[in-house]
Length: 269
Ligand code: KIV
Ligand code: NA
Image (cartoon, rainbow, N blue to C red; front, top):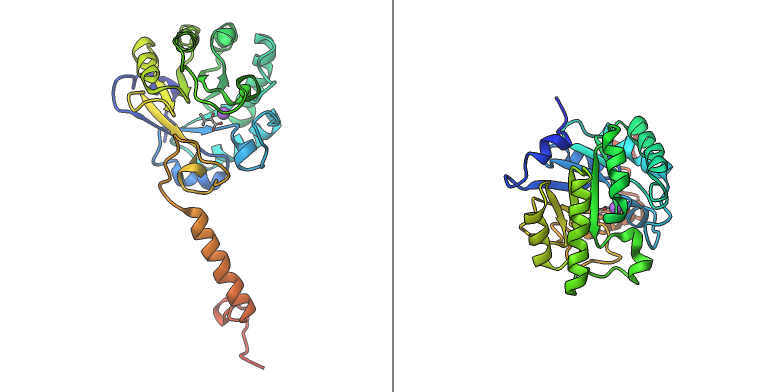
């Protein structure tokens, strides 16, 4: 089988919506690979898997370790790895050094980085040197301190205009797709109309060219906090609690392990 490439996905602009989810591990990657077009190894793993209060503490080494696991669990979806805070902003050269390491060590299909106008030069530098880039504008979580919290963006005319300029700048710089996060809905529509590459919405608009969610949010495994844009399609937290309670009762009652779980069981003594 051949993996879906970012080039394949660019051609999907205006056609069938692009289905994207995050994965951080081989097990989740295996479960979703047949059902999605794109798997993002998101730096949200800092919060979802490691309990950090933002994504700022995530490192390139963490992204590489999880990226490798996700690649081992999939062979169909396009796998994109997030570049963490501090690994790409300083200069195009620094970005190339870290992005090429991520590409070489994980063998993923491309990288994603946050930012608009200010990252356009870097995106162009990377794309011209063989690194496909997905951009990310609007509510960019690595700027949580600059925003003063996880707040929806583009609520004033000026702010909306700046986000449109960001999306246009990264698209013109050569980004293959643009994640549009946490913006007022009409802005999601407007950006989708005004750029030539696919928009991937999260808290944006159903008119975006694709959608993405954090898998743990969608299956109810990350209960800490639920942004407005998350829809729970399953309640895995309740299933896990029920399973753990069942195990606890059977251990206490000595009904687990049962004879079929034992080697050479001789009966009650
Ligand atoms: O880190 C992440 O999971 C993301 C997506 C939610 C877009 O950046
Ligand atoms: Na991210």
